Image (cartoon, rainbow, N blue to C red; front, side):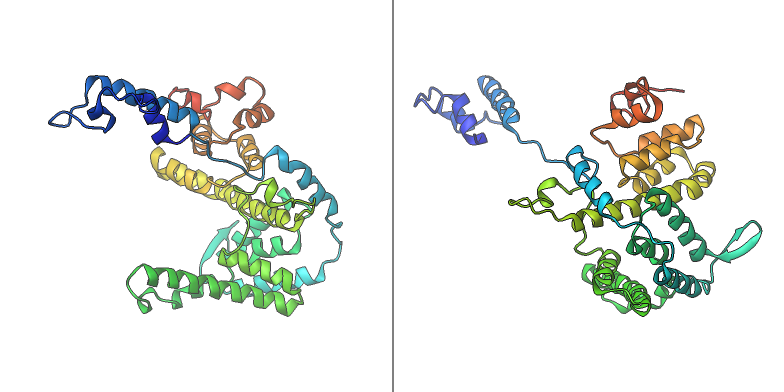
Amino acid sequence: MRCLDIHKQCLGRSSGHNPRPAVARGHRYRGGATLPHQQGFQNQAIFIAKQHRRVACRASIDDPELQELIQKVEAMRPVTPADRERLKKTLRTIDEINSSDPNKVNIDGVPRPYRVVYSDWVLDWVNKLDPKAPDELLILAKGRSIESWKLADIKRDDYSPNAAGERQWQLDRKTWLANRLTGVMKEAGYNEQSVRFVEEVMLDRDIPDPREIRKYDLVGPLGLMNLRLLEQAMMIQTLRDADALVFMEKNFPQMFNRMTSDEVLVALKRELSKVSQKCMGILLSMKWSAVQLKLVSKAFPPPRRYASIMKEVEGMAAASTHPGDWRYRDFQYD
């Protein structure tokens, strides 16, 4: 039922009775005041409209309806071979290129190229989250920032000073990185399908969003299943979780000591906006102080099954009394 029909029904116009034409036409007193009897009709119309309002569909890769398909994808994955020469060659080439990084970071008192160290951190978390990670995922974890210090040569001043110039500048930077990484893959002998997927992820183009994938996106009317699309969504989610875990493990403690709590919370919400329930559980199981845990819990995106996450991590009592629960957002636990 449309809102206009509901409004007509509440005003009695559907039966042909119109005792107050001015009210039915939405007229008001001089000065904009609402007629006394009109306010009640408007409230009733709004109440009926809210009852018929449709709720937006929300879905993600963590939905129970996708768990059966995810198990099929994991069962179909081949056993990771002990010797992956092509992958080792690609990762070794990426490290050789990034070893020229002018930015250094001290690791145990030894200066090392920053992009080599950071890519190792991400790669370690990807292997922990997905022990059967395919080659494309490991290459993306290792080589997304390949030789990215040369992006400074693509200057913003060479483009028009408007929104179109900004978009073209960003696209050219992404294209340069994508071509650099896919060139290394082609030299190692990867097929066109793997190269195309890595290129699409680097360009952020035509890739599935794990937060919006649904079962009817994967299963056709005749029962045909697009498990490759689901596998790609799983890889992208694993990559996002690894990035968030590296940020929390390496950057969050320093930010907590240097910045105010409001600034830290803004940064956490930005970095943790796309994490999965599995990543939330890992973050909550890490060793944080009471204030740090409160900030981390507040920064989580509001999932529909937050209670099940807390029940798994901290027990039944935490399912409804944890600081991250929206029902206790104004409660001070200090």
